[in-house]
Amino acid sequence: MKPIELEKVQEYLARFINKDVYVHLETTNGAYASHVNEKAYNVGVYIRNTKVRFSQAKIVGDGKSYRAGLKMEMGWIYAEGLTDWEIFEDEKLLMAGHDREGRLMVALQISETPFHY
Image 1 (cartoon, rainbow, N blue to C red):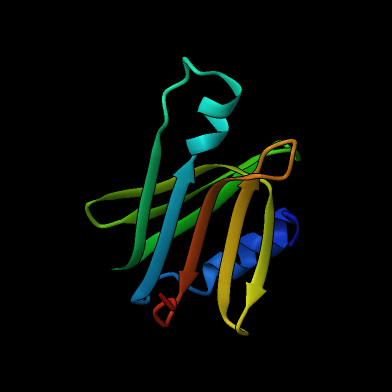
Image 2: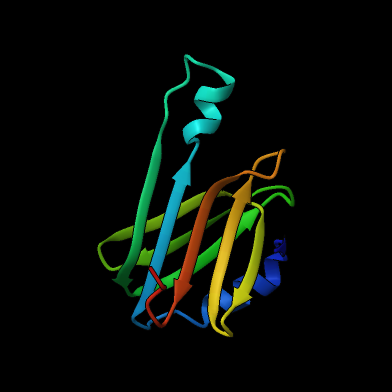
């Protein structure tokens, strides 16, 4: 993966607007949090192959960390803390956020075809 390049990621996000696409979204602090601080709460979100259509896609950030939002007819999908991105299998967009030690904290993937299990 490489650091997010705002303009390139925005351009790639635009390719999915007004199309039926599949989304994978996960967040975790899981074992990372309780390993470091036993008083920390473990939290996480995981959805895979949810079919959606969005009319707007936006990524913004300060050069260190980014947030991406996908506006659907009845709400939003939102991921914050993104740091890296890549295109895989020639058409799938993967954005991820890693902590200072390189551990995954958030991932948002978008594709016109379902993700492998």
